[in-house]
Image 1 (cartoon, rainbow, N blue to C red):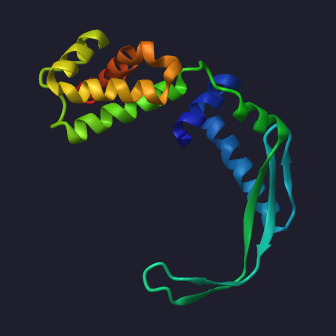
Image 2 (cartoon, helix red, strand yellow):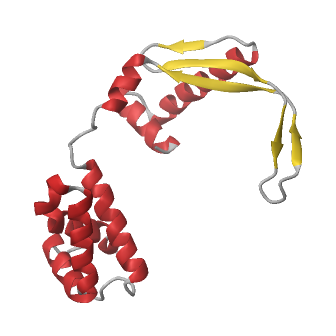
Length: 178
């Protein structure tokens, strides 16, 4: 999430202006930074704990030439998520089709990259079903391979593979053109 989005959500939830929400975030950031500079920890219930920690000096190997590189010790900020945050991340957000949408977007991106680009004549006004039909014609056997790949990756969603791929194609190929 970008800063502007976070500021807008805070302003909406608190009933304040975006300017006030941004000021609140800036104060929070300053206070956490000052506490960490003083080697104090900052505990935000439900979110986690920020803590300053000393990272000892060490020797590493360079990636390009495998030479030894000395890295001096330094104070670093560490964050440990609270139990509530860990539980929230373990639960699926929104609906249970997040993974299906991610796989479909990946497959459609691969098709456009390796299959000769997107079909001609797509527009944002088209229904996902029409986009799916045009992609099937344009990509031919590659589209069928993508449907099969989707079904192998997510067997529980295999029956709806065309629907997910069509929606992903609509999102990725039509939204870019509008």
